[in-house]
Amino acid sequence: NLNVRDIQVSHSAQSATSQKVNVNVSGLKVNCSFRWEYKWTIFNGSGSGSAKLNPSSSASVALQFISENYAIHSPHDVGIPNCNTNIQIEDMGFDGDGLGIIGGIMDLFEGMFRDTVEGELSSTVCSELRGLG
Image (cartoon, rainbow, N blue to C red; front, side):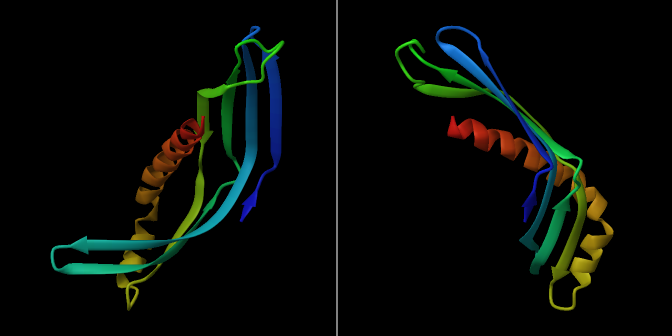
């Protein structure tokens, strides 16, 4: 489930061989579900969970399109010189593990997981976009 409040796109010709497109997305609201699993010595467990982004989440990406000469050739390459995200998780919930004891403990410490997950999501978004270029 994905909602976007606003998308702004701007374009600038930097030279006869380079053009830049900036895309700013604000008001990202995403609801997702996930599976989790742990293994520690002889103990293990797994379960499901859900998370949702705070609508204050946003992303800004600059795409640079390269051509031999835009007057006669279309672009042959694209790069992403700038990628910035502001991912704010509003809530995370954990279920599972049979009696739900571990899921309940994880819910208690959800705030500690939040910063780690936000950081991982931010770096993943930008690295995945750069991989497409």
